[in-house]
Amino acid sequence: MTTEHKATMSFSDGTPSVEFPILTGTIGPDVIDIRKLYGQAGKFTYDTGFLSTASCNSSITYIDGDKGQLLYRGYPIEQLAVHCDFLETCYLIYYGELPTPAQYQDFQSLVMHHTMVHEQMQFAVRGFRRDSHPMAILASLSGSMAAFYPDSLDINSPEQQDISFVRLIAKMPTLAAMAYKYSIGQPYMYPQNHLSYAGNFMHMMFATPCEKYEPNPVLERALDRILILHADHEQNASTSTVRLCGSSGTSPFSAIAAGVACLWGPAHGGANQACLEMLEEIQANGGLEKVGEFMERVKDKNSGARLMGFGHRVYKNFDPRAKLMQETCREVLAELGLENDPLFKLAMALEKIALEDDYFVQRKLYPNVDFYSGIVQRALGIPVNMFTCIFAVARTIGWVSQWKEMIVDPEYKIGRPRQLYTGLTERPVKPLESR
Image 1 (tube, rainbow, N blue to C red):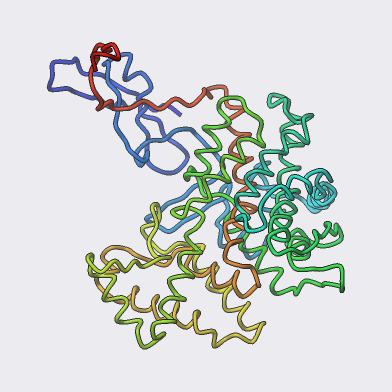
Image 2 (tube, rainbow, N blue to C red):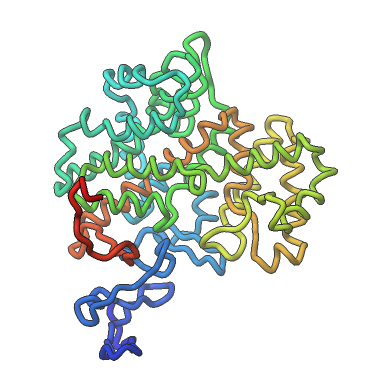
């Protein structure tokens, strides 16, 4: 909302000063509204990576990086991850409130009865090479839903917005599991609607037609918590991509496919894989005995050693999700009898050094959620190339909720960032024979 306060921008090149409104949210820093800057001053702002730019207003997720705080619709992530399951969290993020028991039962039934995908999608999967990365398949399949569900393409219909939301939440685990099963040459497993959301996902991933499969409750809860912790995270790269893509009026399926593609980048969704690979490399080169040596190399900018899973673009304190993931990691390893897992011991040793060494403390390099999630997923039996697919399944609720919020916002416009042009000025074209 607009406050009575103004921000004045003055220029040393003779351009008259310009006043801008200051907007304030319910919590968080104030925002200077510069939408009329070009019209009044003939200038743009320059902000690579959009680190100081608010591209929208949103009431879904709030992060305070200095405090290490993450809220979904006002609820602390620490409480949601303990007291709610993923479908409750989905309902909250999309509709704005936690469901009542009756609402939860109806919502769960609705989602679970949309888990099957069109049978023709199996043939789409078979068109890929067997060694295709599951994320390549998932990006294609999520976008192809626009072809299989054309009745959901009226983006201005509240009814179709809601059915698209349900279809995406319900079918993304099915598509991710299909991509995985195809990559290992196993038959697809149809959804089992009597199972929980996480339990059904595990069934589609790990069951075969040869024998009955029952998800382990401890592991099932661990996967559910992973989904909750990754459900939304404000205007990150993939969410901003979904909003930018969706701002053109394209289908929600196409916008979410763009989000999947962005998430695939190693600097975004691939961070937990990179962290696990770092731990495996340390283990291969001496394990616990070499942890101190590795951390000293990290301090040396010329060594090429990188500490993965520490620090965050937004959090300048302990990532609240990391604490929950550490607890989940302990629970899973204890359930599987892997308390002495060498990678977990390495992770604890790295964390201890990072929290005590002045070099890392001064730079606020605290563990983030990726530091432990790779170990947990590895213990669950999820292969490394599926880590980002799990992330995509979780983040779909955030993407579709952010898309819906944008579509119904009366101020929304097609995204059109500007640029600082540094190329050649106008020049004439010479005929071919004169060049």
